[in-house]
Length: 550
Image: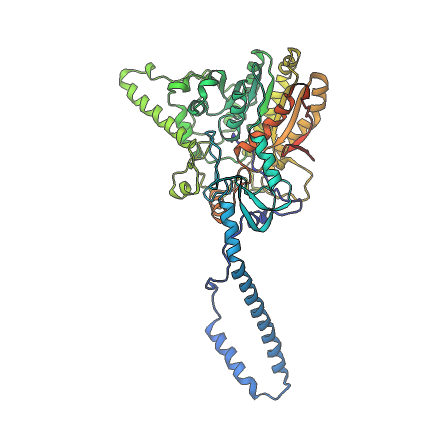
């Protein structure tokens, strides 16, 4: 179960095909005409026959049908050669321009040649050029957001026109006064979820996050330099959202603690990883916490109904059994003989978390060296294929159930059972309460072209969108709860490992980063918390901060 948002399909105008994405991403310098052809030549016997026939032509009388046949064939060949030479000349002429454009795009933060996965320490991506502009392109390209063609490239965004880049910069750091408010965020350990969590905490909210790896989450948040300001307002819940009984228990526990102002349904399973990808995280959950990582309130749920989780064994076959209340492990609780071993294990787990949060931990160089750890703490999944590429007959039934339970059933249960607590927040004086369902373009019906891959994730996001569309108006009219669905934007690439590395080497990089995704999710809350100028957004699908067709 991934704690990141689902990746997104082709953002280009409707009707475009996904296999055009890479070609449109970054200009290439290949094919300049300077290469030696690598294709096999003509069979020597066939070539000898051709030359012998040509030598015999002068002996034929003028106007002979064989001469006319050869003339037609050679004319076609001559025209093709001329066209090829002209094309080669054009490529050679354009090669410096293409190389210039490539360098401009690679100097941006999002277009960096080493960028594959973003880090979650809270350090923004940086450009290699000073100033607000990376340069001018010779060949205009289409903006990811508005599709208008542009040549002036923003220093941060390689795939946004100046107008959309300016708007994105403005909203990356929006804030709201959330002091005294309570929030629940699912999937808050890493990537977009961690950035959303940091927004809520830094703006004053008391926050509960869910994750399957609570100790890793505690280590991550404790690593941040300003954690002393808000770590005591953070509660971390270890839970498997594929188990509805655990979700019900979570909702009841949160509701029992009083009014709830904000619910963000962010957790989603997109692609089921192989067990090895989680091995370091699973091992880290058995190691004790030390230092500031012991400060957040922590709890987890036992398997309430064993039959169901066993049937959905999934990716964590080697995971240790969770305990009813996950108190932080402490070396002091161990015997003197075991204390040193526990301290070493704790340091190893903390070091892994630190690596996952460090710049360059999942760069192209790290992948080549075999040392990559992504922002979620996962090791590269070396499977040659995954469910992002699978068509309907290839999707495993177990994965189908996992995706529906995590991506649509769990959000439904939380909205349903926490509605009274959110109503209570409004009755206690809050202007509004908020439900943000983190969705994706995969759940949209209004696209002329829909690729055949990952139908199970498309189904789940469509179901989540229907929850918003069906219930939002009634929830606002009755209880002043604002519920929206939000597309995070194209920030991740879920293709199989080898393919992902190949297209990164060819120059493809996602147009947005994790901060952009979190900012889009946070935006409905910011807009609603502007006092008398507060904006009531509900019952809509938001893409790039604006209502978008379902």
